Amino acid sequence: MTSIMVLSACAQTSVSVRPTYQSDDKPAAKQTIVTTRQYDPISRDEPYTVQAGDTLYGISFRAGLSYREVATWNNIPEPYTVKIGQRILLRPADALIVTDVSPVSTPATSAVKPAETKPAAEVKPPVVIATAPVEIVAPIETPATKPVVPTTSAGTTEKPVAVSVIANTTAMNWRWPSDGTVISRFVQGDPTQQGINIGGKSGQAVKASSDGTVVYSGAGLVGYGELIIIKHNNEWLSAYAHNRRRLVAEGSKVKAGDVIAEMGRTGTMRDMLHFEIRRNGKPVDPLQFLPKQ
Image (tube, rainbow, N blue to C red; front, top):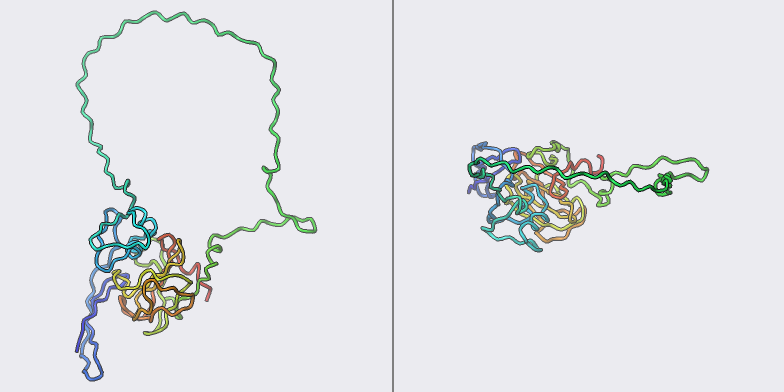
């Protein structure tokens, strides 16, 4: 018994004809690999038509947008349900309005008879009113205008402490989603490297990187294979792609460290996990948030 697997990698889409068999079957003798074109993200220039298997989270993820923005632009309330054939705006409606900039025809000019000029009216000199001299007082400096410098009990000044924006987000306690070596890193602006790839073995545990709710569990996003997306709050999402098997359904509540999938190669040529962190729909470098190894 043989079956056909269609694989689509993040960097390229591949079609692999690979035998799968039961214990009483004989393995095929040859495997054929055919490489096709690189996949493209969803364009924001025109509305997207919902296909079978699409979700608002998945559409927003592919377009690199915040699902909250997309829901607002399309007046879609929670739980953000979309229907097959529905057209989804991927930018504000007013941004899609085309302004007519065609030239406006003007009537031909005709000779205009100059108006008769009248003698200028007599201008009287302004009346000057004498006033008492005004005393100019310098502004009083209030304590609020002075920077406050903390001091120690000994009276010496302390240096101000810089607050890191990233440090404020680590309260989510991000953790590594799987064991293994990072074989591909995040590249800003590259749609094929929007996260990191972690090498490993088939069936290896894939774990939730932080607490949250599963908002996507499926294989409908081209280039990601078997994919899980977890919503951590209104700002942060994480994604786990190319799994061999998904172990959680949409709507599941998960804790950091919970096993959510088995590592695989759906969409790649080797066993690995593609992991992304997104803030307001935009990919960020996961290595800025994960603990140092």
